[in-house]
Length: 197
Image 1 (tube, rainbow, N blue to C red):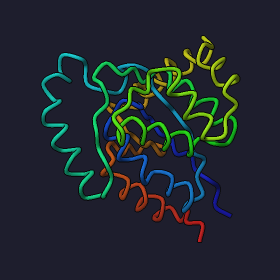
Image 2 (image 1 turned 180 degrees about the vertical axis):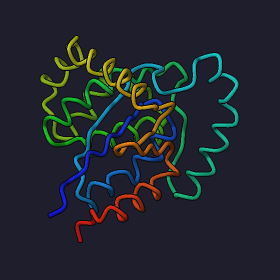
Image 3 (image 1 turned 90 degrees about the vertical axis):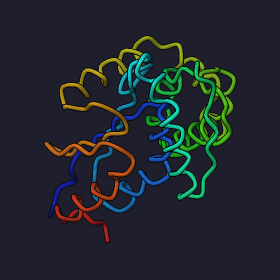
């Protein structure tokens, strides 16, 4: 019998391309025998540096708007000061509690579908509650330095794996960077004979 393979996923909640990926990425878990290895990142990790980002914003917003139109989803950029770190920390608890999908889609839809700053604790707690998490436990998790360290360790691992941006999927030595590479991930997993059906 074919064993599950590890599918590492490096993700930053501030990335509009991660928003686009959030609409289809969980199909990889649904359709293939994979161990979904969640690797959220903090702050600017996995994204263009601030000075580069300023130059890229106009082009990125045009590009993401085209994608959103094609996918028939809303796209309202959040405030530029939005810090993705708390959302990444909270996602670790969501993963532990078995509601990562609901949490990720809730955060991304709020941030990029409604244009809300998801760096605000009250906003995240409301999303977490809707995803099925206990608000008090979630709030405590946001202030856990060990969880912050996990995000930092994830970035170190990303760099060791050759990751240069987000979203990125890694399967053994194969790296798939970008929301538009998810089809290639499907193809690769199919070639490995890992379809569930």
